[in-house]
Length: 119
Length: 108
Image 1 (spheres, helix red, strand yellow):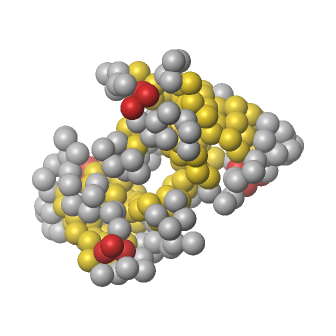
Image 2 (cartoon, each protein chain N blue to C red):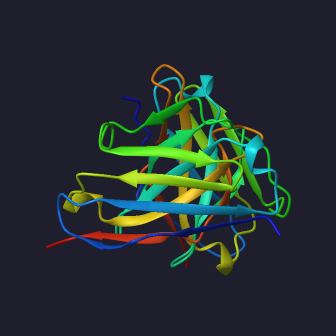
Image 3 (cartoon, rainbow over the protein chains, first blue to last red):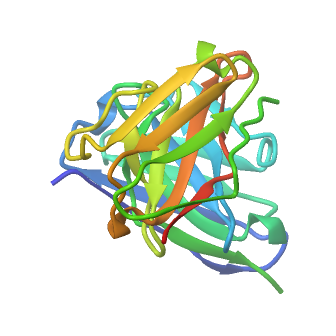
């Protein structure tokens, strides 16, 4: 079964750090671009970042550039999001998603992991 | 940055046709993807490349894209179609992905 499973969410204080993981299974992870998308409570979807298949190219939303780092370990079939200098406005459910036949159409999504930034 | 505009809500009676629009500057020159999200669930891709349907998505779902507007059309609407719908594009000039604000579809 094709699956993405996120982990690493939780409660963190403003200014703190957190690393999210996304474990992939059921497909050749190293062949696909991968993305992070977030959704604040009661709000819409917001794209966060993407990484190409071999990890050599990345892109970030302006709101997280310089604070978040996306990476991947193709040997472990795992995608990461290192989040530093966290702010209250980063509070959201974070989804990892696979870029399918179109690298920027997300055909597989994880169930999401909640990140809460609060003192 | 590129902006996508969706109506906040659309209402339709069962069995009728729902049309959800997504406006953007010359959006017809971009590939538009659509997602359905039900409460408490992850989004699901329902249309990609403007009008293609992933396997498992009913033929009742279709899409079009021209000029400054892309449209998701849901024919013979069912109660189970009630959800939030989001359009999405990749802006090649900035290498950024953009989502519309989302449209809540209510089945009356």
